[in-house]
Image 1: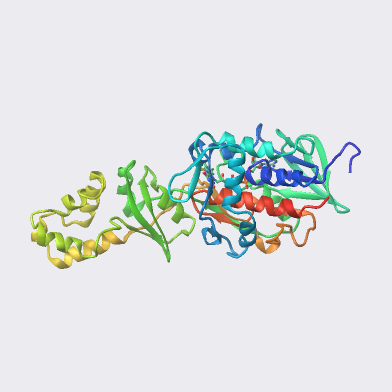
Image 2 (image 1 turned 45 degrees about the vertical axis):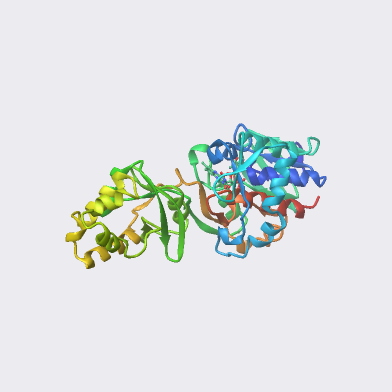
Length: 396
Ligand code: FDA
């Protein structure tokens, strides 16, 4: 190790949600911590999150809201640092908040308050958050890690990988966590974009003309479904229900959309009886935006008075509206993905401490790990909970 190396008890790589929470809690336990951040300021993803108001947790967050090769992995950390713990912290800092969509908690003011809260939680004399420090190399020697960052060398017996995943590369996000994990012989579950818009082509390309139209739907793939809004875009489909389903969707699969979630199976037959002069188009326009109603009516190919349409055709149309099949051609990729699925394999880590079982002193937390939450504050809750679990396990 070079003689100019700066010694710490722990080095945290990345000043995002997970890294800052971990550093704050470790500092409060009396550990001397360096947080190395390549950006010019900490918490950049927090700042843009939730439209600038940061959806900082979800009061319903539980292990069932996360995807991972090992669905049990997140249980321990999530149980030990709960949404209520985060609410208590937010309130301790006088940050006003509100519940938006069910369970989703946002700042009334600005996401900046969450970053400031995390920085204020870091004891000044023990935690140094060092920005413009891009980590380029890490070495391990006799139980100590040496970290090279922007011309400086930092050393510590504990190293925490908190550099996130590659979603939104234009913000500087990279797969650095995975490179580092592989360097130390840890497996990485193949990363792919999640909470991401889906693209449409082929038969479905006409729907792209509906760009800007949204409607409440149920989106489904396999046994998983989400009852939220969908939005048509100039590339395909987005909106909360689609972002949610994208995390479960695999290339080559279809997704199913229920356009009128509240409608009975035979609603068109009932309408034929009550209003035989109505058309499918006029019936759909009662419940859906006009442009969407028109496109669906056209695709169904029975745009005449219901009284003149055979019952069988109406039953078929009703069934199609209840499970409209789309065959996405892909996703909009990491450039538009809110998070990354996959990452450092949970099989390599202790679910209690986040420490790599084969590399004592090496930890991984937050989005870098193969634990991915639903849309709605779940990903930050994982960042907080995994950060705390790690901080409590670090030793000087
Ligand atoms: P995060 O990515 O936050 O932090 C990693 C840090 O490491 C970054 O600051 C990066 O610069 C740094 N870094 C990377 N490589 C480095 C290197 N080589 N050297 C030094 N530093 C390095 N979630 C949620 O729960 N509620 C929400 O409202 C939103 N909203 C939202 C909006 C948008 C647009 C996006 C893209 C994402 C969200 N998310 C979200 C997801 C959430 O932002 C994400 O899950 C967490 O930020 C993950 O926290 P981490 O600390 O793990 O990584």
